Image (cartoon, rainbow over all chains, first blue to last red; front, side):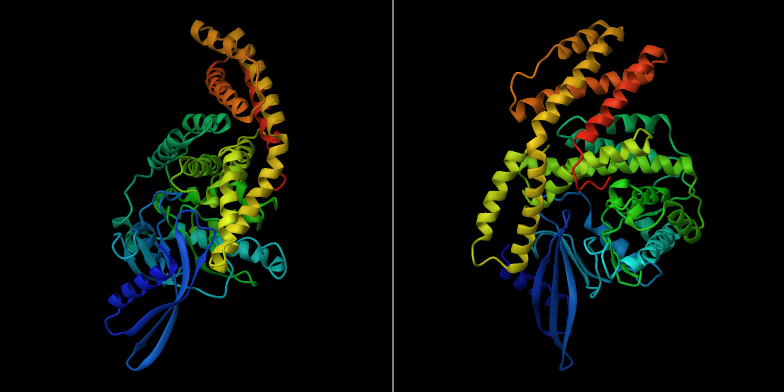
Length: 342
Length: 148
């Protein structure tokens, strides 16, 4: 869809959602590059209400033709909505559209939290360098708060598939091994060995069935120069599961960004301490190791899916090539490290 | 190297040409060209060593499979490993080397699982060799900007 048509159709859609508003229009629309699972646009909505001119910065997240991650956009929308207004900072969700009629594919619209960084590019340069430890403590404190949250009280137990504490590891491993089986374009001896180890050494039952963000890493939150976090983003893989899954994913060495420590931010022990203090849970080393190795399997499944999607020709966005080329071998090295061979 | 470098370069050529048109929104152009530049840099780094890495890895894998054939008791499996171990890289085209690499890795995964299952010292010694080869292979493929 051409940009002019998108602007027109999005404006018409917004007007229909705002019965008290007149002269509703979309302006200043710009695509935010980098998203491989959704197309993301920043735009300003202008309208008149009660004789007063108004404007608001908003975000449009629209499904592309073939997403890197197959997810229900309702899951992402409801996860944001559940946490909004609480201690976990997230943008406010406005509208969810699951059909194709309005914009040609499903989408949602949310408030824009402006004035902060999301990408990792500037993080290890001035003026962010001095605040990295504080940012790290904040990052793992928020992750602990997500783990502590009650999925029933949040209303997410009604949206996300139910699971039992003793089953979560098998369900997740089955799912991501299935993705590898379906999508790998070349054999992966390291990751297949990791899967055999995971099945032979299952973790203990989860301490609780918690909300799992599913992609909690540096780069998926909005941060400032003082170590503050103003919005946790990218909830499309949110599910119920073992809270150690998120901690293990955050420790995936591919998210070290060459800085030699988790998230490129904080020593592992400090990160665990912040998470345990905020969650009220314990990160038992053996259980955490299982989930760290699982994170390597999950990561590899996502990277090979990216390669497959591009290879099949369904979506030739160059962003799909980057993880395949830059991360598949790095993920192997990460798995070798977690297994103690590197 | 999947997707293949040659395919990606052909696609990037088309993108660069399209972005030369004057009517492309600047933010879209910046995004596409920035990503294209990133991939061209990765391709440049991978391209020069790609054949050597595959030739070396295929040789290592054939050695492991040959050793595996001497200790795997099941006849059909032993013959499978022997046949693969006797192969040679006749063509130095990346697609041919990659195809052979895929066949060898399928066999390596099967051999590795068998070695893990067994408790005898010969199997354990060869399992250690498999791990060393996997570490070496991941080291050879490491890019300069790798996060780990």
